[in-house]
Image (tube, rainbow, N blue to C red; front, side):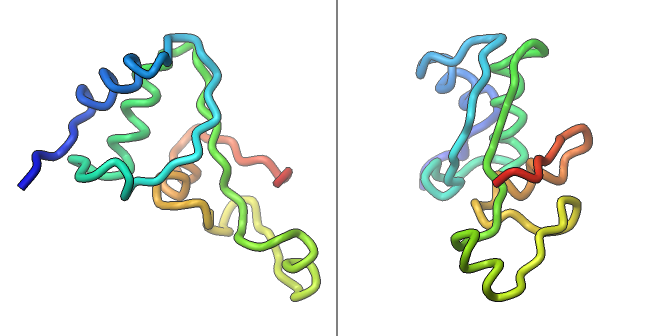
Amino acid sequence: MSEELTTSDLVREFRDAGLEPGDTVLVHSSLKSLGRVEGGAGTVIDALLETLGGGGTLLMPSFQAGSEFFLVDRGCRFDLRNTPSDCGMITEVFRRRPGVLRSLSP
């Protein structure tokens, strides 16, 4: 059985991939694709924030599944504070973190 990835493992991998303190990064993510992560989605987010440092900016999509036409046609509503992200577990955990700002723009 493979070992779980830790925050420090992920920080090392993100830095090896070229992320640096102060970067602005838009992350499209898949927790499953990373394998086993100690602490799950929160650990991935912690590692990204540590990699980017206080001067960096972390962005993630957090919209509902379906085209805008499809959603409007079916009467779906988007509540900035409460509508879950359909873009994966990492984005859902991220959007609920204190201090994270969610845009009305899809």
